[in-house]
Image 1 (spheres, rainbow, N blue to C red):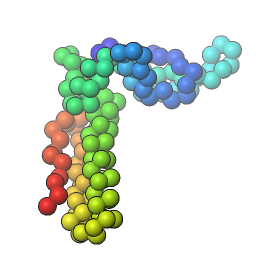
Image 2 (image 1 turned 30 degrees about the horizontal axis):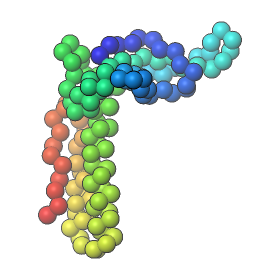
Image 3 (image 1 turned 30 degrees about the vertical axis):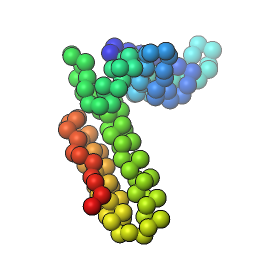
Length: 134
């Protein structure tokens, strides 16, 4: 993983790009114009391999890299996506069966998502287990 202090892009908010096995994640976007007056975006970012990106999503950084808000946001977004599939399933089951256990499960998922969001304050990667249906 390599930190890229300044990246210029024609895109106004490039958050993620993939080129072969290389991923570039960007943040700290500033709107600028080039010498000809064309709008561009200047930002910072990280260049990493797909394996490093997957490790990041799962809460592991390469030796020497420290968690920061931008990297931790990627980790949290991946965790929230884990719950998204559960929400879809629980809502489908609630519509099909009207069983109140599914509503309870949806509430438990809401609480789980809130606890994942709260990890931002400390950049923690200790994620509670996803709730289960009882």
